[in-house]
Image (cartoon, rainbow over all chains, first blue to last red; front, top):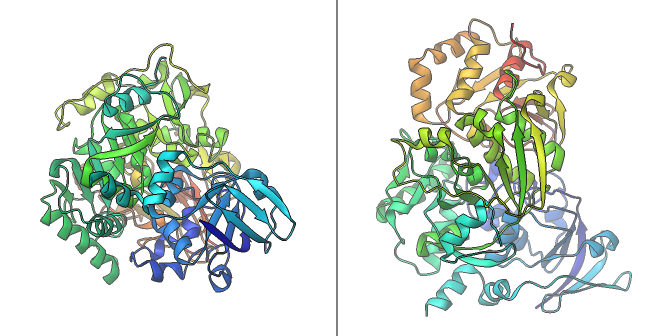
Length: 163
Length: 419
């Protein structure tokens, strides 16, 4: 699995309230919600993001609420991958469960700039910044989690083990 | 290898003798919880995956609390999805308007969660029940759906930070000041993926409401769970309330902790978290020039009886300052009723405050107290992120019920001092 696109860069502690403000959570329609992704800190994101683009952020990405709507809107916007220094634990779990690709790589986050063209290979954990020519290696997921992702999410993996 | 209290509960529920930090386990769940925002997503996933029955109708709790009484048509539709699901699967612990409360105040109050439990909830503040000596953690809707279908969840066994409490809190401080102080010390990711285990002789001086408040905000330090040992206070609280037999776990004396942080409760001062992160803490008395437009006393963090009592002691016979909207929200119908019976509601109204039926409403910027651009609120809630209570350019300051009520009287952030 691979993705390639332009980088949108964000700071530390991006919380779920800015990813998708709770005032919109009176619906669970992913497309309706996705129109508001990141709007409280970056009004331009939704207008500019293209299929496969990459979010790069600091420590503790996705802190706050357990709303699964947060990884879901990021994915629905077309984002191919989120690379962060670290993820808040519920966001990390939710991203895996709904099939949003995420990678932890502090070194890449420090050096990759906004608007760089970056490609990511999830099978190997390899991140290439095509703008700067630099390559980084992220920690791959443990096999247990790889299996969930391979099956297409938690429930699909449960169904598979049932059969 | 010796185990922490959390590790012992997880080992038991995974059916193994021992667990070590980092180990992936599949654990049996005692309760699976969801609310009116997260349950509709879970119901959709549950159906999409082709599940047609829940693992145990008595082990699922669905509480409508975020946007009820329904704030608008869309919210009403979401509540209906929850109601229909609960009804068709005969979910025992379904709480609708009239008997609902804010989930994390309601479940302990109704004895649905108890000591020794392993609990997941599709709400980040599910970590609250650690106060009862349970392992309890927040998850997303897909985990809730899987939990409802199978009664199991996977976990990575956490390492722990031990907080050794000693001494006794000053009279104008509560559990809220303890947890805000700790978050200020370790930061919003200071306990990321870890347990926060509270121990020490100071524990016995903390009431159950204080402990529930402290565990409630463990997630605000990034923690997987917060947990208190079971003592006389816990057993007294659970007695006659707990629907299932409590099971007591104790950390091994030689359990390993990543670090131990000593907290002298007697040195805690009234503390406020400034915008826009809970870790931006300052003593309330250093913020006396900060003017507020609104005060909110309530939420899963501070909407319990002791919180209402603190507000009453300060507001009775006084007037909320001109230009300040003071919103008080008892967290459950039982608390609401007791506030009526004790005369608190009359005192709040006479003081110029408004009293709402239970709802998460303003805490997450849903309704019932939304802020305009440039407005500022001091609230007993749990998050002060950008746009949390309304306009992205509004501000939320987090504080205890003492500090919030004292601030309502002056219109400025005010440390409560007894007369």
